[in-house]
Length: 262
Image (cartoon, rainbow, N blue to C red; front, side, top):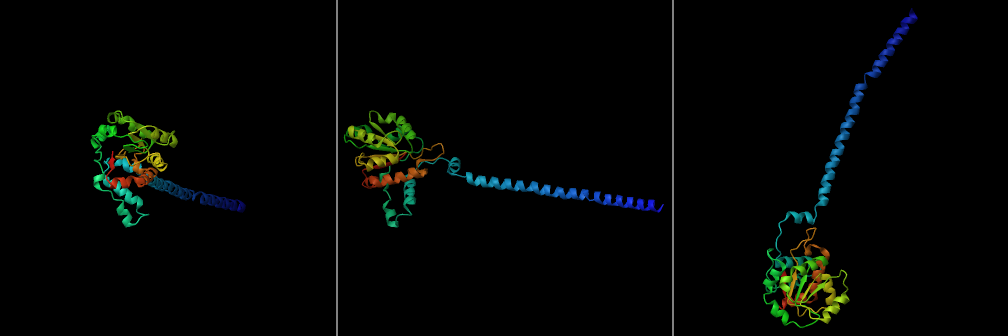
């Protein structure tokens, strides 16, 4: 009897132990629930941070230009770009010397013109002018743009203006400098359309004389697939200013050369 009682007590204790072991289970399940909640919150925060970081990275000139209304270029834009470009390498006096007189600028395109209509407006006496031009290794008018493809587009779009004028393509793609020098030396050319880098190289090598030049027109307002104008592209902007220093600025100040922003 005594053994049975002790067995019963032990059995009861075993039951109590089992109950004690099983009772805390809900509490432990609560504990496991809390980390899950914490785990779910963390990815959300990371996602927000990632989104913010991505937005900052994507904010480029393309996004800014896409939201902005197209504004036609004016002479002040060119003057300001020149000062900004040379501000770190020139003194205040030298920067003032870069200022061009208002008289050297032609009327700017107000975004309503085609190239032909704009050129007719800034140069109404073109036919007479080109008939009197007989000097080789030179042109009367230069149109500067950002690429070879854009050069071809501009040449096609100026058909109504150019008439019988001789036109030369001045870009580096598939055309060697020597070939262009031979063409300029061989015949009288009235119009040159191309990139500042190749025009600069021709001037440097003596293949193109800028003194007879009467008009220099920048393809200022046109934007490429990334919505960049020619002066928004650093390498093009650099070459433009280097070309201006190769005699263009002095010709403008002497008022023998006029600048236009198309």
